[in-house]
Each structure stands twice: as C-alpha cells, then as structure tokens.
Image (cartoon, rainbow, N blue to C red; front, top):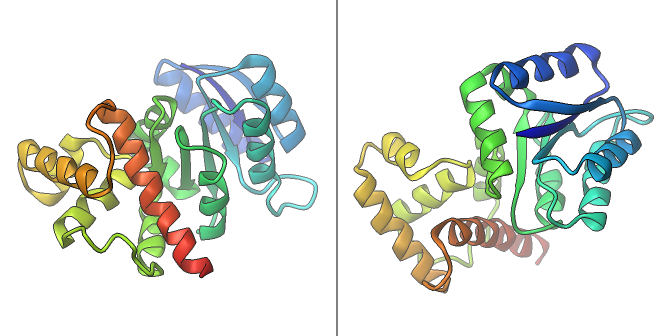
Length: 220
C-alpha cells in the first residue's frame, strides 16, 4: 500500500515509517504538521493516511482538522488517526466525515505491531478500526436506540467496530465463524441493511450506524 504519515515527533514518525516499510508498504510522504499532511494526501492520493491528532502550532486538534479538510476535498480518502488519550468527540468528528475508511487508535497500540498493521489494512480496505477503549466509552454513554439487538449481537457489533474480522470475532468470543456469520446477518436484518449490498459494505454501515446512534443519543 501507499501511505502518508504525519506526526510532529520525529521519533514516532520514523518509527511508523520503519514498521510500515518492513511490512512491505510504501511511505510516499512523511510530514510534521496538518497543512503539510493535507497537501501530501491530495498530491499523492495514497491508500491510507496516518496522522497524529495533536500537531503544531497549538497541539490541540490540528490533525483532526487536517483529516476533515482532506475528506472535504477528497471524500474517498481513508485515514487512521492516532491519539495519546481517548477523546470520544474526536471519534465522533472523524466518523462524521464519511461512512468508510476511518480509524482512531491510541498511540500505545502501535507497539502491538500486528494489531496496528491490521488496523491500517482495515482502514485502507474501507472499513473502520476503533481503539477498544474508544468503543467501550461509546457503548457506555449510549442511550441505545438499537434495542432490538441481543447482548451477544451487541458484543459482535462492538468487536466489528474495533475492525475485527469474523475470524477474529469468533476467536474473541470463543465461538465458530459460522456462529459469528449468523449473528452478523441478524444484525444486518435488525438494522435494516439491504441484503443486496455486499458483506463488507454492510459491515461498515452497521458500525457507522451503531456509533452515530450514540452521537444522536448523547446530543439529545
């Protein structure tokens, strides 16, 4: 994959680049601030962009604003945002930019190399990859309009929101992949997702609907 990386920390930026290159990916641009990230994304049109939430000059939410700017100019852009702390509003804002190809992870996850690379690939493929801590906070604050889902279906959808495949969900819940497939089909049906859509597209719509329902509940 072709990837753009943005972080004001030289150490982390070069560490990310090394991990990605060793995994067989091509880092086509490595920058240190939001405007440079926007420029690089629109110039290179990579498979995915990875960026820090907090970058110069104010070290608040420049990265998030850069991600939103990229999505406005290029709606199909796929981006994975890294953050030192869980700020659920950042996940809300990121999800609001589109229905596919978004991720929000804590920087600590980068050290879990396999999971980090899997998240990068999930986002590049048009899925979602949300840090488990983000998902837990979203679930805990919900006023749940998705009351039709059973507890097990909620577990499955929560793991899907973390970017896990059916196989990974099955392993986490100690069930068969066939059982997970049945749960996902019931989730799709209860959320009114058309069986005419392909499986991966329905997974994305289910996750986005799940998280946006939380946004609606928290603002009401």
